Image (tube, rainbow, N blue to C red; front, side, top):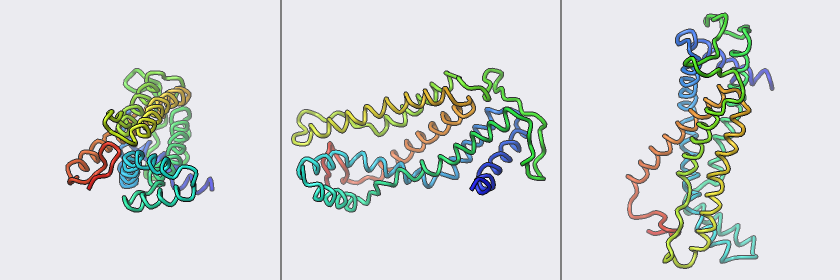
Length: 251
C-alpha cells in the first residue's frame, strides 16, 4: 500500500515541487502553483461536492418538516427523505467524495514538505528533474514554512474556512414564514455553530502543522470559496421561477 501511495501521489508531487522550485526558487510561490494544479485536477469532483452541499442546505427546512410531520415513525421519515432526495436529484453523499480524495493528497503534501524543507534527500527525483541540492524553506524573507506554530497563516486558513462555510449558512427566517419557521431557525442555528466551530478547529490544527501546510490549507480553501462563488453565480443566472424560497419549494 505504501509503495502504491508513493508511486501515485508522493513521488509525482515531490518531483513537481522540486521541478517548480528549480524554476521559481521561492517555496511559497511553489506551494501556490502546486495548490492551483491540484485544484484544477480536482475541479470536477469539487464542483459536484459544492452543488450537492448547496442542494442539501436548501433542502434542510423541508427535511426538518418531514421529521416533525412523521415524528416517531423512523421508517416513514427515511422513506420521505429518500423521496425528497430523489425528486430534487440530490446525493447526500456527494459532498463527501472530494474530502476522501483530498485527504491522501494532503497527507502526501505533508510528507513532501517534510522531505523537501527539512532534509536534502532527493533520491526519489525522476531522472529528468535536476536536484537543487538544498531548498530554502523561507518565503518572502518572512515565513519559514518548515516550522510549526505560525499563527498568522493558521488564522488565514481559519478565516478562509469561515468565509467558505458562511456561503452555506441559512438566513434567519422571517416571522411571517409561518409553519416550519421554528424548524428552519433550529437548522440555521446548527449551521451557524458549524460556521464558527470548523474555522476554530482549522486554526488549532493549522497552528500545529508546518507553516507550509497552513499556507496550502489557506490557498486551497480560498480557491474552493472562489469556485463556490462562480458556481452559485452561474446557478442564480440559470435559475428559472423554480427553486427553494424561505423553506418552501416553489414551482
